[in-house]
Amino acid sequence: MVDEAAVVEQFLELARGTSSSLINFLPAFEDAVTVPGTSTLVRTHFLAHDANGTPAVEQLAGAMASATMDFCIPRSKIERAFAEYEETRSTAAIMGLDEQARNLFVKSEGSGEGGELLLFLLMERVLQRPQLISKMALKTNTEVHVHGSDGIHASLADDEVLDIHWGESKLYKSSSEAFRACFESIAPYLRPDGDSRRKQDLLLVRDHLNVTQIQLAAHLLEYFDETNPKTLKVRWNGVCLVGFNHGNYPNIAVLDEAQQQAVSKAVSRWHKTVGTRLEEFEIVGVNIDLFCIPMPDVADLRARVLKRMGAK
Image (cartoon, rainbow, N blue to C red; front, side):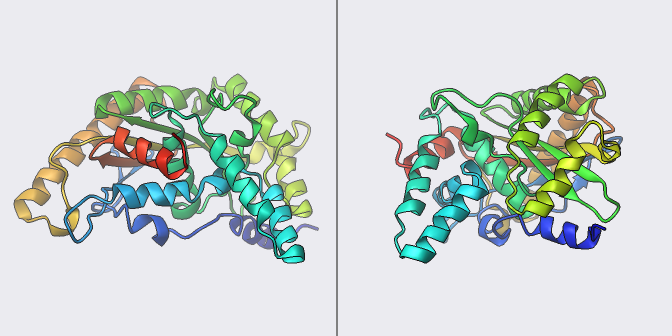
C-alpha cells in the first residue's frame, strides 16, 4: 500500500532552489491579493535596487542564467553527470550539460524564452511546485520555440489530488497587451473545452516525465492513465508571469507616503485589468497564481540574460 504522506514529501523535494536566492532581487510589493470575483491570486514584485540606486536587472539576469540547466535538462541527465563527477572527479559531463542547456535557447532578444525561464524559477523556488517535464529538452531546432504551454508543474496534496499548474509568461512593453496576451494563451488549457490542448501536453508528460525515482514516477503516471480512476483526481490550475515596462521606476524599499500611494493606485489598475481579461477569456473561476512584475525595460532584461548565457 502506498504511503501517501511519504509520496507527497518525496514529490515536494523535487522542487529546486530557495526563494531567497530570487526574491532578494524581486521583493514583493504589499501582500498578495485575490482579484474580486475571481480565483486569481496576484503577487506584485518590483526589482530591488542596489546601494547606488540602480535596479538589480543584472543580478536578476544572473540568477536566471544560472538556472538554465535546471530548466532545460532532465533530472536523469543531471544525476548521471554528477554520478560521473563522484566517480572521476571530472566536471566535464556537468559542463557539457551546461553548454547544452545554454545552446537550446533561441538567440534572439525578442524571444519569449527568458520569460519562461523566470516563470520556471518562480514556480520552483517561490511556489515550490516541481517541473513535470523539461520541454526545452525536446527541441529539435534551437531557432524555434517549444509549442504548447510555457511550463507544466504540479503539486500533490494529502487528499491525493494532483494539481497540474500550466504556465504562461509574457514580457511586453505594454501592461495591457501583456495581460491580454497572457490570459488569451493560457485560457485554452484551463477552460472545460480545453481537452484537446491539454491532452497534447499531457501525453508529453506521460512519455517524458521528469522524475527519476521509480516508485514516485509510477505513482504519478497513474494520474495520466485514462483507464485509472486517479484521472478523476487531477485539477487544472494556472501560473502566469506578466512583465512590462514601467516608467519612473520606484525603489519600493524607500518610498515615502505619497509614492507608496501612487504605486498602490497603479497596482489597483493592474488588478482591474486582470479581472476584465479573466472575464473576457472565461477563466474567472479557475485557480491562477499571477506574478505581476513591472520592469524598467523588459528588452534589457532579455538581452542581459542572453549575454550571461554567452549568446552573441
